[in-house]
Image 1 (cartoon, rainbow, N blue to C red):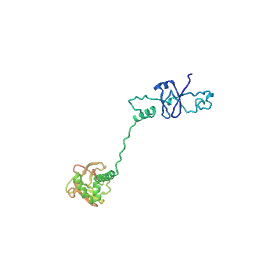
Image 2 (cartoon, rainbow, N blue to C red):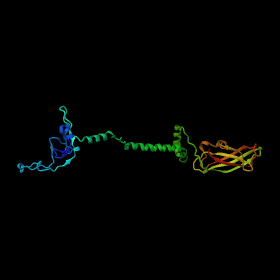
Image 3 (cartoon, helix red, strand yellow):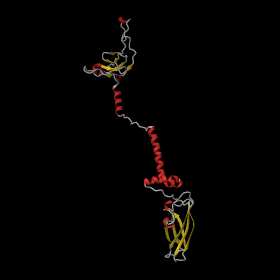
Image 4 (tube, one colour):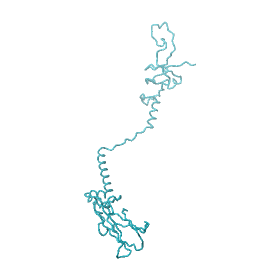
Length: 279
């Protein structure tokens, strides 16, 4: 087996195991991987084999004669070949090992900077929040304008002016559950002066504290078995158009008297039903 070769860094005295191929590259110029000193690896070769003591040099200290020195032994891979320096180009500053540079360049190659998220300033939020709140209130007022005008009459003039611009209208509130409207009394009589003519008498009363829209009435004639003979829907203009302003609705606590003449000469009936609804 070929004898192992060693070279020593003159800067930090670290001993490296080297190969002939390494020493043949760059005419032996290498860089210490420990202290980065550039030196001639061929000239700084040493032998770690014990040397015989010479009588002539008993009093002199010679490290090579004293036997293997105490060293920090490093692998040959810790040595790096030195690039030749041309006269035209200045010497390059010492740098990190090439493999480290490659790793850094690889990381930087695929690195990216995340765009910073710009947060709205406090002044902008201070303006935007009140504007959004006012817009929400305006939308709620527009959607529930009939209820607002009914429950707070003082707001009705302002809402009316807004609707004049927006193209909407303030209408009386509807009691869809029919909890504030009732038919107090109703009666169906035959007109003694006209054969086949019936007279419907009823009274619609409001129990609300604000105006309510006039409901429609469904009037049905039935036979002796309760089956429908004829059905008719009576609109507010049919039963109250001549005695009230329909656009104002039924006044709070007010009542609407109803008296209608119905031609039933073509039918035979034994009873009737009457109830209210909103179309």
